[in-house]
Structure formats: C-alpha cells, structure tokens
Length: 120
Length: 156
Length: 340
Image (cartoon, rainbow over all chains, first blue to last red; front, side, top):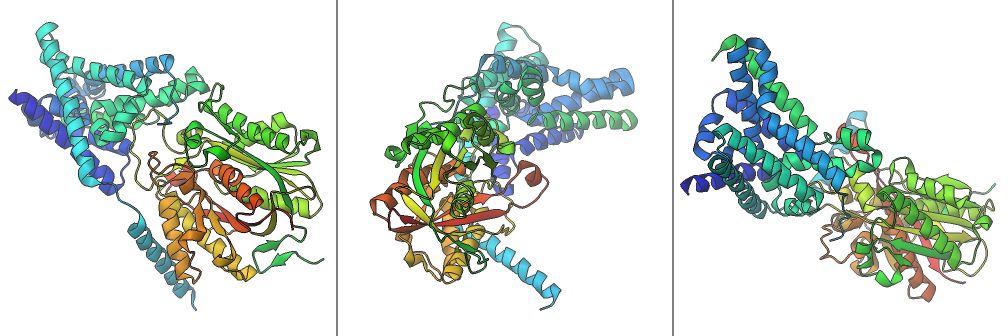
C-alpha cells in the first residue's frame, strides 16, 4: 500500500511540475512532452532517474520522463551487449511497446471513430 | 524628432500596451490547476502500477514486461477514450495531469489520426498521426542515440 | 471627380446603400445563446448532414446566402456580385458556396473583420452604380478553425481564460440601391493594420483591440462624431479582454465609450456560463449577430444609428510559429435605421 502512495505522490508531483511550466512559462503541452522525454533521457543517462524508478515504480515510469528513461537505458545496455550499433537499436527496442501501441491504437481509433463537435 | 527617438517612442508604446494587456488579461488559476493535475496525474500512475502488478500476478510477467504491459494498456485506454470523445473533457479538467503521463503521448497520436481522416488514410490519418507526437520521438530517440554513442566512448 | 470622403480614412456614401434583407445560420451552441430567436436556422448538429466540417461550413455559408435571397424574394440570377469570405485556408467555404450559387464572386479575407469589409466594398459597388443588388456574406465554423489554428477536436488541451470560442455560423446581407430597407449604410472607415506586438494566439482580443481603437478614433476624427452620436458602438469579436482593452485605449484618447452604449458581438452571442471563456470569435460571429440582433433593432427603430465595427486578428499558424506578432485590423460601418 505504501508503494501505491509513493506512486501517487511522485506521479502527481511530476504532473504539477508540468502544469506549472504550462501556466507560468507559456510552454505548450506539445513542448512539455518533448521536454519531459528529453529530460528523462538525460537524467537517466546521468544515473539520476533509476533511483526514482526504484522508489516510486509507475509513479516514475508512467510519466513521459519514464519513456525517456526507457530509451536511455535501452541504448546503454545495447551498447554494452553489441557495441556501437546498440546506440541505434537499443533505445527504440526498449520503448517499442509504447510506440507501437500508440501508433496502432491511434490508427485503430481513426478507423472506428469520428471527432465530435464540441457543443457542450 | 530623430529616427532614434521615433524608435524609442515606438518601443515605449509597445511596452505600455504589454503592461496594459498583462493587467487586463485574467490569469489561469495556478493553485487549482496544480491540484487537479496532481490528483488526476497521480491516479493515472496508480492505475499504471495496478496494471503492472496485475500483469506480474496473473500473467506472470517479468518486471520490465509488466511495466510495458501497463504502458500498452494505458495507451489503449487513452485511444479508446479519445475515440469516444471523453478524453478531451478529462484533459480540460486535468491539464498536465493527463499530458505528462503516457496518456498525453497517446492522445497526441490518436486525436490527429481521427481528425484528419477526411484527408485520406495515407496523407490524412497516416501522415498526421505524428503531427503533435512526432517531436517526442524525434527528440527522445535522438537523445537516446547520443547517450548510446557517448556511453560507447566514455563508459561511465 | 469629387471623392466621397470625409477626412483621411472615411468614406461617405451619398446615396446611402440599402440593406434589403439579411439571414443568419448558426450551430447548436450559438442557437442556445441569448439571440436564439433572431437566427433563421439553428443547425441540429455541426456537421449539417455533410461528410466533413469543411463541407458543413461551405453548406452553412450557402444556406445563409440562399435564405437571405429567399427573404428578399430575389432570384440568385438577379444578384450581380457576391462578396464574402471565411477563415478556411484559401477562403474555401465562400469559394465553394460561390461555385454553387453561380453569382459573380469577389472573395475577401479580413479574418474576423470580413463581414464589415464586405459591407464596405458592397456598399461602394452599389453606391457607385457598378452593381446592384450585391450579396455580402461571411462565415466560420468552430471545428474547422480549431484544426487549422489550434488542435484536433479530440486533443486534450486546456484553454486559457483569455481564449475565445470560434462561432459556428454564417450571415448574409443583400445590398441594393432601391427597395424597402432594414437599414442604410452612411459611412465607412477602412482600418489600418495595427500591431502592438501581441504574440499570444490565445489572446486575440489583445491583438485586435489596438486596431479597433485606431479605426474608432479615426472614424470620430473624420466624421466629427462622438461615441454619444451612436445608439451603440458595436465591435465584432473583441471578447472580454479585448473589450476591456478597447475601453481603456479609447478613454486614453479622449473618446470614452459609455458601457451602456457599447456592445461586442463576441460577448453577446453565447451565454457567459456556456464555457466560452472570453467570448465568441470568428467571421460568423459578427455576421450572424448583425443579422440576428442588430439589423432587426434598426428596422424597428429601437436603434436609430449604430457603428458596426468588425475586428480581425490577421493570424497565420505559419508566421505565428516563426515568431511573428499578430497584426489586427478593424473596419467600421455606420448604419442608420430603415427609411428616411
């Protein structure tokens, strides 16, 4: 149960940081996405993100910084295994699930649904 | 009046107007926005954790597979909610609470894919799928490649 | 040849062109607003039976034109020119409607100021004896404007309090040199493009207010009139923020506009609690309100004389992304009620 509390708080705080950036700096949400992923890659490469994942699990992996962490760790371990080529294969391989799911389900939603007029 | 003076005057006018606009434009409520982002974002992460735990317990997944399973499921749920026209309402309430988790990434792919369907499957849905989320892949993947190359040479 | 002008920026119409009829077609959300009874048609859904929202926008534009002609008992073959525009790239809604209507077409783009622009040019054609009758129209659609200027409809995005809601609607007016009139066009002030450095595409009111203040000031200087000479000074879609800024700027220039004599179409088209933040915007906003709420009051004599000033933010996503500021423009048309 304690883990779930940590997940909630860390995940929530990462969102609060995002909301603050949107409101105070005029960064658009699209830029926030880019910023979070890139920040995740850098923090992970510096070894700063893994401890947060150990502490808060999904609280750190579900936000997009976690996506960046996945990319960076994938690249690093692939370099350890296969050398320089791993720099190109590792990141995308590790993050493939999320990327393929977003592409496929996004496409599927387009097949099945139409955007609705916002008349509420 | 010299040209320099005119430029100075024009700059002054812009500044005066910018101040007036700042005074008369209502601000977004920071406290309220953060509170909403906090609880919704927190709940999405908790849902992710629950999915991962369920994957470990019932599907006997390894830790990293379970985390992948959680991401894929969250992406699926986002695509579904986006499709039926509910996600944007949640996002209007939650702001960064839905943007920052992987749900924001999935919504950014799904919504243009749906939106540009009238322009055709290839140049509409196929190409526009990446209009908002494409940069995430460009910068995320590029950064990981740079990290990999640096790691190859430095091995920290 | 004598110029029909007053001052540097204002046109005086010697024959005072007549607005014979008008019509407005709006979306469901607009149909719930305070002017619900004034619209000729409220769409049941924003697709209007079409395949895409762009088609719906075109159909709505055409519907407004056809209803206007029907009310005036005028065949489209009799109309000598159609002047109009919308917010789509290449003003396609107006162009497609013109294709169906087969009326000689002059496409206009003035962003949300298009309705006033078309009235001014239409009035000149009629008054100069170049064409009569002339159909003037403008329209916009929330769903097409969102995808073009902002985000896909289903994209989860928070609006800021200064953001405005693009009106789904179209309005048309039939101008002529003869016949019973709802109102007559007496003066027009063509606005300059004014830019005081606003970059925030979510604060169009702030981008347009300086242009509105500029045109208004020039109109008063050119005509020697004061705000008090009009029953209403009506702006197109400044919204809450833009209206407040306009009041501040006009007070600074010595032409304060009394609150009771001021109206903004964007502020009056929706109920304020209908989640529209700073108010409505779009070409269809001033066009549909002109037909639904302004011309009827002039016809009934409730208002004797108004200044209708539609305001436009000349925004393009491309130049905006390149860091360019948002220029504004405002055109004013003085309207007087019915017969002499």
